[in-house]
Image: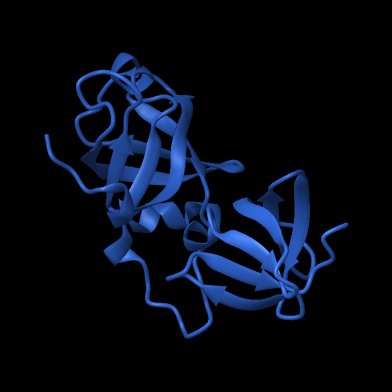
Length: 176
């Protein structure tokens, strides 16, 4: 089965558990708001083992909703708890082409992860492993190199994002 390549998809969440007995699953959504993942009626699932390992398999979302603080969904062809249990831990992605176009100078977090972070003085701090929201004024980049650094993603700190070269230049002290 041939699916999209890793460059053609963007991770949106993962199947995190079971909900009920009729094949519904709990979704850990990376989107904000959390239920934005349900705007996409078709997902790609990535399995760690079995016949679909190392590839993406497309599946249709039959229905979904917010349930308390989380997202639950029923996937087409997944009609009972046993079938749903086989999906727990599976990553969810959508086609990159489905993402809205961004304005100049805006980036999806998925595009920043893995970029090399270099100070204005040319000192390499490491690579971005992930980003997270603080609930405050700015997001934070987790930069892993000789040690882990938490670097604010603000216009005062981030001076240049060069996706082609895979580098972000920051005004940041290497000793922070």
